[in-house]
Amino acid sequence: MPRTQKSFDEKIKKLSSSKKVTPKKPVKRSTKIKIIQSRKKDLFPHMGMYKFPFRFEPTDEIKDKLNLAWFDEFYGEERMINHIRKHKLKSHQYRAYVNYWWLKENERK
Image (tube, rainbow, N blue to C red; front, side):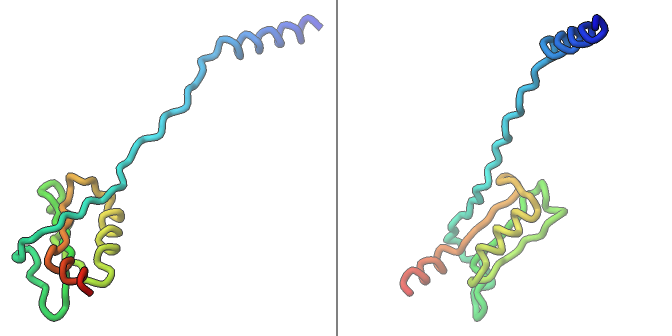
């Protein structure tokens, strides 16, 4: 019986003196994707018969990995957002534009 009591005391000692592990706080990630309205028509050269009013522009930091891209009028916004999420980009790594004049035209309809 003394052997059992001794092991019991050791276990109690370990349990009471062990370091308490605090759970890590979750990392805050900003999932908000900012799309800027632009009045500059020269940013959107593809506004003829087929309209591409959404423009994705990588900054200098990732220019070697991603190209300048335009997205169509139908599902362009969704596709651009998926493109940004797919490459796990942060807000300082890209600029996303939408053609202001195209938005105005679609408000009337």
